[in-house]
Each structure stands twice: as structure tokens, then as C-alpha cells.
Length: 299
Image 1 (cartoon, one colour):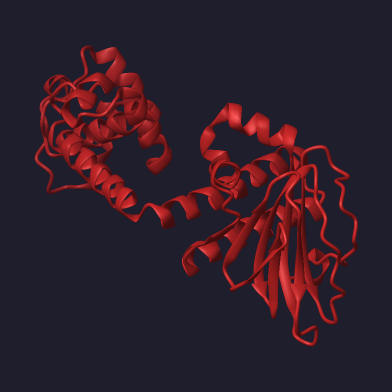
Image 2: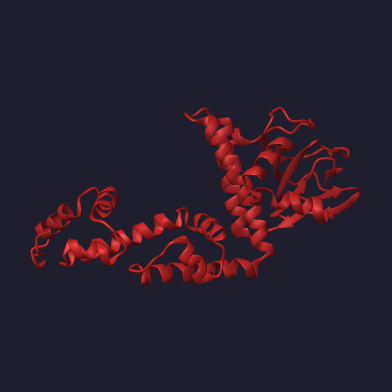
């Protein structure tokens, strides 16, 4: 990691920012601090060292790849046994107000916070792949914090929220492997069904009934896993099918109705937006560059 992203450790136990702060520490000859509490949330990502975490008077050894979530008011401290070894960690502070705003946006952001409050579970584990992903998100946020690029203010919130969600998702999927497998199966079945039923009604309501899940869950599930809405995904698949049929020589006037478009003007606008050409222009250019292509009838 670049040297300028590293912070010199100090014993300050209050936030300077009203929302969040992130620090990367790498210390030799670390001087242990006294037990203390915060009025904010602390994500402590342990990377390396001979260290343990003491929470409410109970010490616990730390392993690389573990994360501690310390809510406001929970007494804690880290203890380094061998100060001659490098002691590396990320410390991510989040204010109660910022956590509350995230909760209103989506409870997915505060899964660990809820676990810590309800079960008094403060230490969590995740896979090495998840650790690498979390570290990449943390480094990206640090680069924005220490940089001065255009859009910095907007990027800081985006990167912070991305890091928070990634930490929560990684732990949740580690603790719910069966559910993660079920979600993967649902996604594969949804994609296969859509691609083989493009000529049929594929509304959110129809898919909800077909797969026995609520349309609200389905909409959230699709956006989370594919990054697009159900409507956007189906539209792209239908347009691709139409394009394939058109270049194969099928009549444009028949193709669009076969794949769920009720009128030509809607199909025309969608096709032009997706491919930058009208259906006829796309067909003509394809035929001009493919001399073996059988000419299609004019529309």
C-alpha cells in the first residue's frame, strides 16, 4: 500500500468528521491503550500482528481476516503481545447519525450493527476472497480521502457506502451459505426462464407468480445481483433476439411482435437507443457487409 495512505497512530477517541473516518495503521513497538468506549461505531479490520481484542473485559485472540464491530458504549481495547512484529489494521469509524441514515435507505447496511446489538456478537470472520474485496474497497475510499479529484465529495459517500455494504454482505453470506446457494439457483433459473420465454408475458407480477416470491423481493434481488432492473434486463434480451432474427432475414414487421412489443414505434425507439441505428438501417448495413447473407424483404 502506498505510504501516503498510512496514518500515524494517535490515541484520539473522538471523530473529526460528522459521518465517517477511515485509517490504515501499520505499527512496530505499539504502545497498548487503556480500555475505552466511543459514541460511534468502529469497524476494526485485523490484518497482521500478535494481537488480541478485549471487549467488555474479555480478551480474545485475533486472526488475520477477522473483523470486529464495536458499537457505541461498548468497552474495548486491542492488546499487542509481541510489539516487535508489525501490527496492521484498518479502523473505520461511522457516526450514529450516518448509520441511522443508512438504515433508512436499506437495512442491508446495518446487518452487523444489528447482530452486535441483539446478540452481543462483536467478532466476525469471512473468506480470503471476501477479505481481498473488502481491502480493495477500503483502499479505494482511502485514495478518495487523501486525494483531491473532481467529484470527491460525492465519491466519498459512494465509496464509504460500498465498503459498509461489502463488509455486511461478506459476513452475511459467510454465515448463510445455504441461502447464498439458493439465491444463486434462483438467479440461474430466472435467467434461463426469461431467455426461453421472451415471446411471453414477462412482467414482474408474472415472474413473481412463477417463482413464488414477492415482486418487491424479486425487484430488489434482480437489482442486487445483476445491477439492472427486471424490465431493463428483459428489454435487452428481447432486443438482442430481435436483432438476431432481423440479420437472419426475418421481416422486421413480424419480428417485433414475436418478442413482446405491442407497437412498432416503441420497438423502433428501443432498438435505436440500444444499437444506435433503426432496425432497417441495422439490417441494411449488416447485409452490405455480409455478401452471403440472403436479402430480407422490404418493410
